Amino acid sequence: MGILIDDARWPAHGRLWAHLVSDSDLDELHAFAETHGIPRRAFDLDHYDVPEDAVPRLITGGAEHVSGHDLVRRLIASGLRVTARERRAR
Image (cartoon, rainbow, N blue to C red; front, top):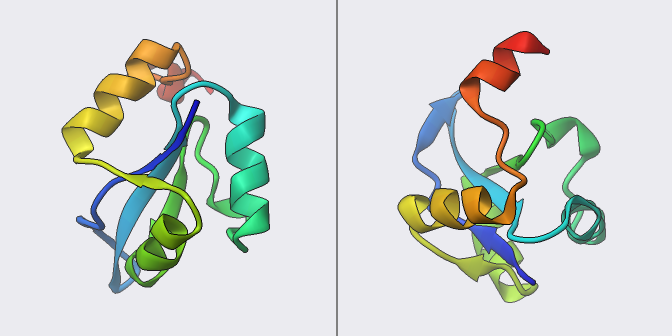
């Protein structure tokens, strides 16, 4: 089990954003986010969007820094990935 974070590469709202995910359990992800001050409104079905300045703090707090490719691969393998099609249906 683990919490994963990728590099902040996605621009929005004048900032760069990273993704924070769990490779096994959404409850684990929510608990980690809450413990580290990431608001629930940052959750997007299978991940949290986190600002670039939070990345070092989250890594220090125990998130495993991985590439975006590895993050997606492990999220898919966990069965927690929400596809674009599923997102549009919600």
